[in-house]
Image 1: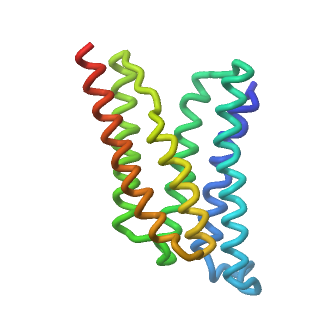
Image 2 (image 1 turned 180 degrees about the vertical axis):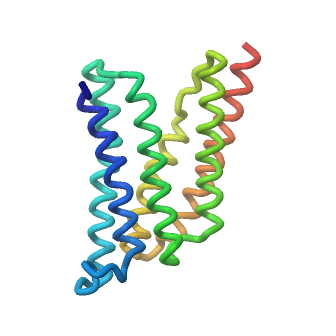
Length: 180
């Protein structure tokens, strides 16, 4: 049976492609009678809902002691699917710099691989404060970009900087675990 945190992660996985469709399929017959700004609003709403599930699934799993191996797999997968869908969609509609998206996604995949390798070696690399702030800043930047708000591009580049810095912290943490 699937517990509530795992259900929330699955919900985030389901929301990611729906949000992507709203961002990139502006000429879909169902959407032709809707102004594109409303598609942006609906995509942003889905993103906010999915982002909230990210907070609550972790909170509930820790608070109610519902951590599972399935959840350990689903949660980061859902996070990556959501950010991948958002950043690629925003890049496709020319709201996010391809370089910013490339740098963020490269870091995300590299660190995910590093964490998998660390687990295989019996090391636990916990998320740093910079990594948590990076996630929140990326989510805010994505929301601003979806809504096409002022300063969204600046916020995206600030999140790129923090994303790269937190990746550096993970690498240092991994190498220090090897010294122990």
